[in-house]
Image (cartoon, rainbow over all chains, first blue to last red):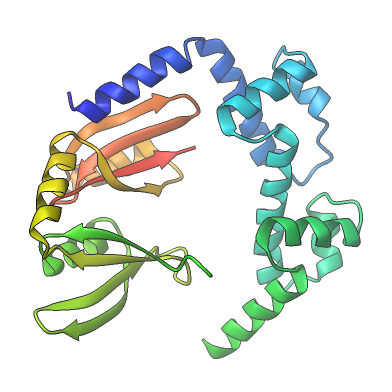
Length: 131
Length: 127
């Protein structure tokens, strides 16, 4: 076994000793991945994972480095980016992906990607015209 | 300032190009002859406008020692994200790729490490 493999095993045993907690948190993340466009309620996810809301948020952040809400926003923005690049209008993308208003969608999109939805869409359109 | 490139040092650029394209499935993006070596980059097939990976010639002797020691310790030179690590492990194994670490869970990620045949370990990971 290599040094690296030993280190991976050491971290697994020492940082993630409780398999059932890890399984529940991974399941929660997958739930967000599969349902991000719907009206997801984090309380519901915490309930399904048998955690209190605060325990759930704390564990999720420990395992993934972001809170479930921050993760949900990231996944939604990634989904929005794909739809924008496919040519869908900004307002259609906004509601399709589960955001409540175009201004809040635009603001979050810019915060996470560094560019506006319009700029993203224009860049994609220009690129496809040259291909 | 934008991150457009990352690199791995390879001991044979031709061999590396073959491995990174034919085995891993990347696509050659740029190839510019530069004397003994070349400027050689590949990109992911799914993100061809994404970050380019430079297959950089290893011509600096001390770097060879560094690379060899990392390799012997099983430490990956870089890592690539995959959707299904077990499927990718099976695919690469069937193509003759040698793994020093089979898919192994570490918290919320699963990791595997293999030999790129050009002096490096590479890691694939699924989150």
